[in-house]
Image (cartoon, rainbow, N blue to C red; front, side, top):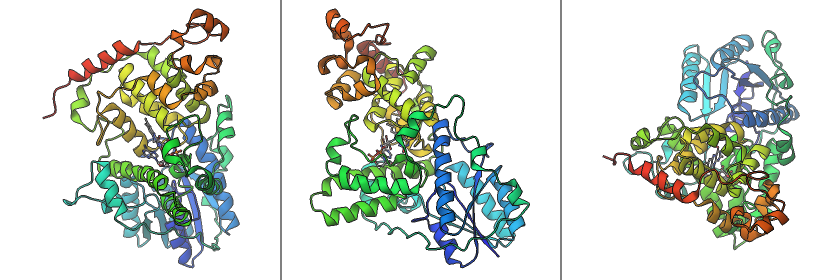
Length: 482
Ligand code: FAD
């Protein structure tokens, strides 16, 4: 009897424990993906992530064919689809890599229980994280709430070396009635057609495992040295941009970890940059373990103190933020980078998120939802955790009263204004000293630069000082923690 491999956000052949175990069974290996458009409690993907998924599945299908198998794509509720496939193929076992959200776990556990009852083996693996969430706990056996001791615990454990891709898969043949239910990728409607808003994303990204692996190699060769310094400069290619590849499992964090460690062994002097970079990769594990133990993270404040926060419902301000028209150049540049490319630099994610939550006093869930829809790397753990971190309501958060000043942040991290010139071209002729605060420019200078505030570029939608005061007062109105 054949065995099945169910792909879910692990779109690669290398270091894929479920695929390798299935291949080692010596049976025919049938691979499938289920697009769950009416998910059983799972959050539907946002637009940008759906666009990424299309390319990711295409690349995965091609690689599987090259290795002797193929990828069948089906639509529907996974519980039903998996049972239908088992019935139709007579498969003896199914293999998958684990997911860590509560709804995903509920779906997977129910499927596993039903299959086991019917004598079918369901094998699950860790293909997504450096360590399973339950492997890294404090001395009381509880999850860490603070990153630094968590990182220490991660660093104290060996990280499994990545598995090579199975050399050749014994592919099976899909037969009716399942074959008839297969849907060609192009008919899934994952990519936009009219309007086609994905042009900027196509220019920016190559999707799939090969692209992920070359990006990692390139980053190690040219970007790792100096990462610790350059990672905060949004105008530079100072970070790896691996996030969407990690999100869709086109590369695993173990592959990233071991490749970086090999580079450190080969080239002395990289230690500090590698340590900083790998600590970011460990943040990703940290947020996943928090999501695992605190599944409410995307939905409500982790600290109950924030439940009564007096949020402001200002629809026009929210719209201006989304469209990059707040009148604060660094905020607008970030929001436009996001809209055009499906990605935003981490420093600017922090500034734009802080601006929404604190200057506009908008519920962080509104921002989380917008990022969810527009980021190619939108991830339930990283996104929810980071928004709560900014809002001050999450575990190990920035304190609420730390309010970024968008002008000084811009001046500090984009001193020449290059990032602004790329994404807010209407300000490109302003000198670096004024590009982050065009309202301070003399009328003559604005005229020369072709800027008419309130016309070619907006005036700030809220003044920084009073907005800051308003945020601090709102925070003070919360009852103190008990
Ligand atoms: P690098 O600096 O090269 O880091 C390497 C990898 O480490 C990243 O690919 C990512 O997987 C991980 N990583 C880096 N920074 C963080 C971090 N702060 N928290 C968790 N993991 C991190 N990241 C997402 O992957 N998906 C999201 O939906 C997401 N939403 C965010 C929302 C807000 C408000 C903020 C402030 C941050 C968010 N991040 C998110 C974290 C971070 O901004 C991105 O992971 C990073 O910018 C990706 O770029 P990179 O791959 O070049 O990062």
